[in-house]
Image (cartoon, rainbow, N blue to C red):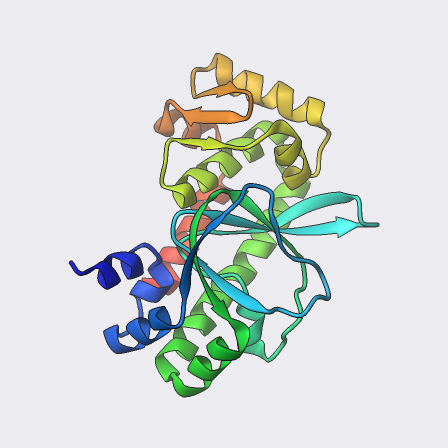
Length: 235
């Protein structure tokens, strides 16, 4: 496998494109490292760059009154940040925060729009991914309303692991509380329960998944539902 193919393989959306189209996109990208909790977009701001995570994850967060927030989407190597450009909208609808630090490909919006205009294969894949993203928004919102905190936390940790591609990652209780729209004390209680069940270990913001099967059993059904939607539409 060439170095170009290796990079493409680390983002499933790019890898799903015909080889010529994916390599053309990659030629216009730069490889960067995203920093935990870094703000990439704010609501209403012009989208100056799009991002294709390869070893990182990005949260889409809706905040009320600029304070309390709720994660409505999580983007990893299955997709991209900036999907609204496919709808002709170049302003960000949500806060975009780095959920898990790591690598990503970044492309200027003007270049991306040119490639989108010239690439029917890219247009088709983005339409499919947009459907998956909309399904995720709805699923995560319903999850926040109807499911208990501990299963929601298990679901979020599984989704983070899927996108970080590691059993070990850094994420703080404060950040998790912000993503799940709860107080920090609630996260501490839920995390301690998962810790006592020996599903995870936790120390100063560093989380390790010890029992993946057990964590899936502890999660709500939203985790499995989202994976099934992605596999059905994007595969």
